[in-house]
Length: 266
Picture: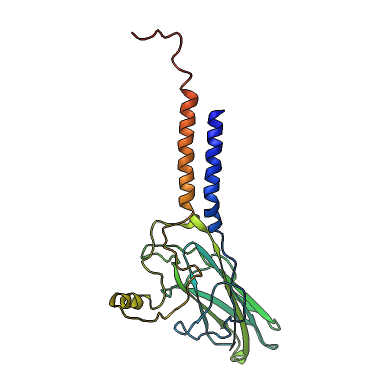
């Protein structure tokens, strides 16, 4: 009974300690559309329009244009990019494609989702989606893993009749992320996130001068250091439970003392 009470008290204390950590890993509510969402898109990587996660950005263009946006993604996040293209009333068959690139401008494959879809004649709109792999805090140089930093979205039509080229279209795009937590944690982190101009800023800080970064967007709570995750909490809980189990096992198996049939030592 004594051991049971000790184990119960320890589990209760660990539960209270782990509560705040679990709450911290809960993804924060998405930013609401407050009228400040961008209403245009860039035409290249360098002119990509910056958007925040949770914002619904809109843009008008023409079939054949390349539309670019950029957004920040941090370690242990799984971004989802969703786009809607509203087509003109009269058009032929068109195929639209959504591509996502990381901070090194490497095309990132979609884990799932329809990143390429074909709209038949008379279709009023086409919806695209791309769920990326979980962003890692660190990766081998030869790997193509998504890393923390700026991500670029490119939306364009890849197949259409020549008569439809240049017709006006309107687009909507939104980026959200799911916080995967310690399940995606790795031992290591980048020195700096892959943000355009970050190296120039680092050199300027060493020289004591000021220099603007080409990309000013970052997560609401800043870039994570990469070493902390809720995996540390559960590792600590597992270690304490293992120690308590060892103490309990020893207390149950050691008996009540010296057996009566053994003569006392001289």
